[in-house]
Image (tube, rainbow over all chains, first blue to last red; front, side):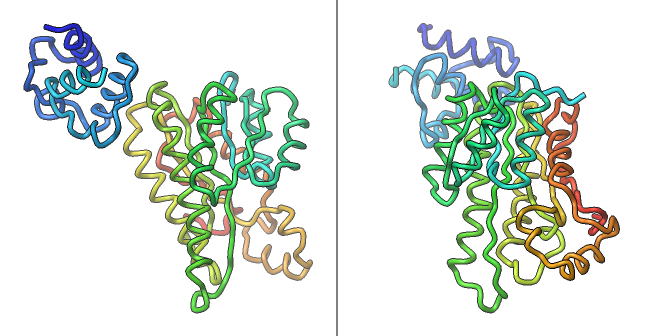
Length: 77
Length: 245
């Protein structure tokens, strides 16, 4: 697993309080990991901070799964 | 009780009677305050009266870009905005049948839209710090209505619905959002009334007098405090019993 994926996974595990093995490529933050809409906003904020990038709102809405997040951040950073 | 040491507060309309009293009360409780308003002179005067822990941030609330910039300026000046008091407001009274779009728009824009923009501007940092206090100054007429104030009453009622919705969304993050709804408060504006006019107003108030700006500030101070952490989505009516709601 890439460095980006590791760091994203760490944030997701810490923020949502889920088991690491639940955070799979296709795991949806809301449907599989129990996030509410506010959690997803906070996750995006945490990603922005960790990776020093800016994720605009329209892009943030497309980040639904762990895989989406890793892909977006890899391309952005 | 009500120690705000280490907290940073942004107060709009701080050049007015009520806003000034609010800023003084928060400052006296230990908060650092950013004083915003359109008139620089009274803001500077208040800041020098307060001494340390006071910043002046002039802003024209009818200018959307300036409003969006204000929370950022406050954070630059103080390091954070932990307490936001949306107190600024305007009136453009007119009987409804004659009310122009411009009279409607200007009041809704300054009173309601700028309040929304400022709330939005502080939300992200408040979410991060897991602590925040939003206090929006509504009005008794938002609940009761008032002839000649269709625009003003709508803006103040809109503020209540907006504040409750914000309160819902962020309650789990340690952020509260409440309104204070003043009744008749003695300010420079009411000093111009004749004794006869004052008498008629006081006759409608069970307390038989107008309120003091400090009595609004005390309600704001409570809602800004750590002790009020479980009070959210509320409207605190401070009106001498004029409307018991």
